[in-house]
Image (cartoon, rainbow, N blue to C red; front, side, top):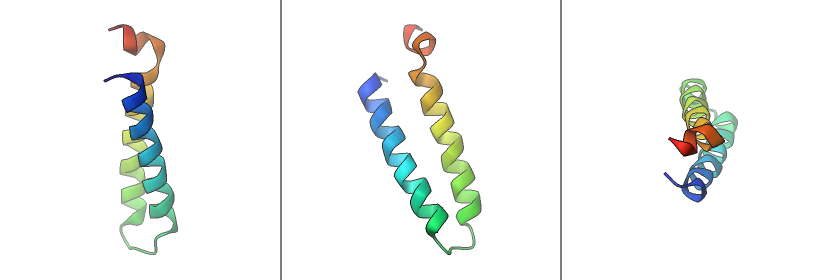
Length: 53
């Protein structure tokens, strides 16, 4: 994936995570953990070494 697409994905997931944290849904805690795991994976791909592979 290119850098701009990854940044858009990260921005989108961050917004979703903020909304889930504010949500009163019973499963929001699990949803936030899943989204944060996805964010970590996307951010790892933005690391300079990951882009070289």
